Length: 51
Image (cartoon, rainbow, N blue to C red; front, top):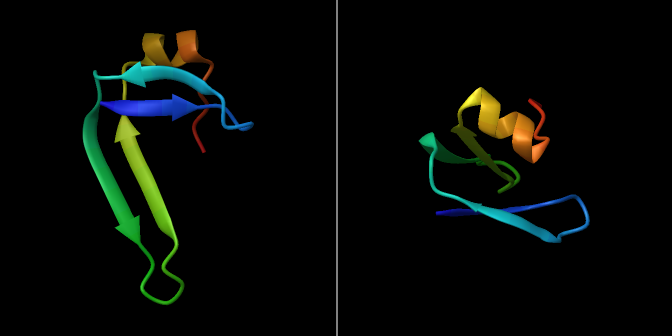
């Protein structure tokens, strides 16, 4: 389960229905990126945006 937080680090919701969960790390900087897919209607309910 993924825990979702807003930009102020307040917990929004636990997310269990996702696909293609992936963590990527940049070799040079060590920065990490998380990506995953969820249903469009669920994203609208959570007010998520595609970055």
